[in-house]
Length: 365
Image (cartoon, rainbow, N blue to C red; front, side, top):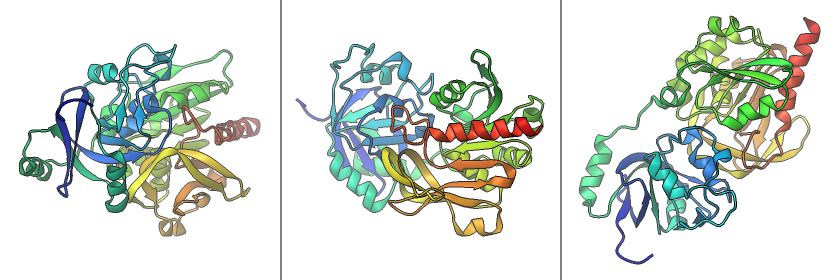
């Protein structure tokens, strides 16, 4: 970079990181987190689960293959900010239609490059995710810290990113009808279900159990999404009213919501899991899959003791729960992302498991 840095990040403990702005020119107070993926910055930028978060990429070069219209995970990206070591504004990829910076400016997303991301990521790893302000380099540190103290992080992210009204995705000769509760759902989840012969009706996060029942689904899907699962008691109540009536499959936030609906508890992780390289063991088979992850919260294992849920998958890095299930209720969920665009694809078979559950249900009807 040439010239004097024009942007900086101030963490709530007083640490500062200076760099160069790209994307939208905006000041934001956000939760700062890191992502260890080597590729997929477009999918990260457009994943609604990153709403209100400033994402620090551990991979140093970002933007080098541009942005392609077919790779978005939502129509309107809502990520808080992007923090990178080196930003490439001249992508080399025949599919690229815009630069990363152009898209970020279009959707009002600020970015900062030239940051010592190795030092910053180690700080997040050692001291945890916390509030940060991305601001003009000339903002006095004390003023930035005062803004951080005065600004509370919002708790309505799911409401802001969920579909406002139902919509449908279909395929030729659909075999099953899946109602998907949208808490900030990635589009590749819909693609994965449609590719397996499902007609998918996507409904808002606060749709009632009775309204879902009126749609006559063969199965119910619980999506990923941003924030604390206890912020959406309406969705938890809906799922509680659906348990045992339909096959249920939950991913990420949907996994936490399903667990809460059964009476379990959740807690916030120190710095969360974000990236496409987390090893997860299927406890039934002993098979280890490399998974894609993006979450700040986990299910408390002790709280499962009074529920019919069993632990089905475990993270091999820190031992946290990565999956639960109740065979009697035909319900299961995983903390990670089997739809994982752009990869890895080790866990896509979980969608097939959901299809098999609906097939058994149809055969017994």
